[in-house]
Length: 218
Ligand SMILES: [Zn+2]
Image (cartoon, rainbow, N blue to C red; front, top):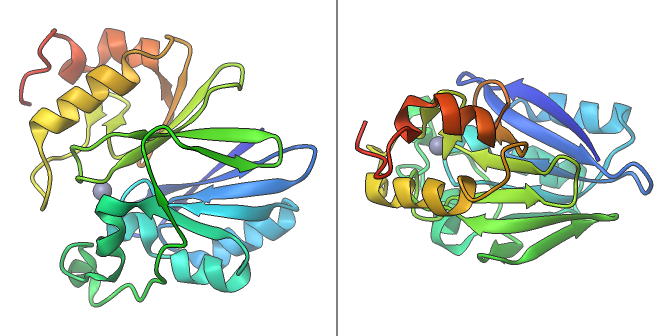
């Protein structure tokens, strides 16, 4: 699997383009903005998106859903049920901060914890990781070597997602990191929603928010 990271929009959100080498089937995770640029990159890479996946419903992660659906109408737009309502809610998806509704299409598929998403020979396992939003999910490519986790705004290199936005919960975020991230092998690569990639081992050792057993409030 090839992973391409594009930083898009005013908050430099990481949009990820994943491509199965054999079939060229692909997935786009968090097309947060600059839809034309994401679509163009898919085309230059010969990537045919089967899935458009939102790790959560904030505008900086969903802003180019419409552009992707228009360019690749057969790709299934996926988000958890708990965050799907945010797609059409200008207040909750924070688009009001950016001058209006995102105008995004409705979800085609509602994600549940533990389900598997496939494109080509690649399998992504959905991990429900509430905390930053109630319906936040991570996507685990567990058969890659090393495994790859696309973790949205749950955890970053040296940081964690904010929990002061509507629906946020520090207790849930801490539990999600403890149960779904720190249980992965140290070599697992973390691809966050903002900033550079890291690994579980790096964050286990150096992330100041993950240094104690009870993950205290930052
Ligand atoms: Zn967010």
